[in-house]
Amino acid sequence: MVLKDALTSATDRLTVAQVGSPRMNAELLLRFTLSCDRAYLFAHPERELTSEEQARYDEALTQRTRGVPAQYITGHQEFWGMDFIVTPAVLIPRPETEHLIETVLKLSDEKDNDGTRTSSPDSRIVDVGTGSGCIAIALAKEFPHAEIHATDISAAALEIARANAARHQIEKQIQFHETDLLRGLAPDSFDFVVSNPPYVGESEEDQVQLEVRKFEPRNAVFAGSTGIEVIERLVPQARIALKPQGWLVIEISGTIADRVLQLLSKWRQVQITNDLQGIPRVVSAQKP
Image (cartoon, rainbow, N blue to C red; front, side, top):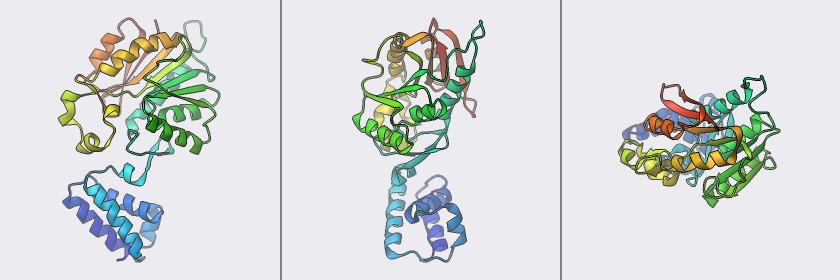
């Protein structure tokens, strides 16, 4: 089968299976199969697929029609302009999580009343629940002189995070810890505690995409019955771990925004940042 016919057939197959953006998925999986870029697909429409390539493409399409996320099939996802390895051991990085990085950058440039920066480029930063390591690695790239720590309760996730740090040649800048949230880390030692914690309630499960429920790590998505259970534990731990005037920056959803604000009622300069859809996405607060 030639390339253009393979793409048309795959698009039809994914459409029947009700996979979202079928043409985009068909192209992505064919690029993965052939290890080529999108320009190659359009430049060589009459190129014949070998039987081995056709078999690999068919297997990738079969997985996608079953609902397996394309990122788990290809093993890759982009975040903050960088390519990350992903497996079913970690949550797939999402564009809205980039608001966490933007918020830390903004806060690092702010001045206190006396004109001094609230933090410096050589800050100590900890990413809680690092997963693929995308947040810690993005922050390491933005703050090359910072000391970055990253925690996760999952040894399998930390293995992926370490691999990603090595791929981006910053493994020496990040210290990884297998622990629950901030347990075991020194008090009054961090300028920023940053986290994309589980924040979906089990009561909302039916509203979550099927492929997320079925294939992404459950303990990275669901926090408990209400969705706020992990953040309820993280806030007091962050207050202990942060230096005076240090910042807590957490990804949230509109569903839990009001309850998170209640948890932070005694903190300073509490602010919610919306994502591009106008949904509350990041809360930042300064240690009182």
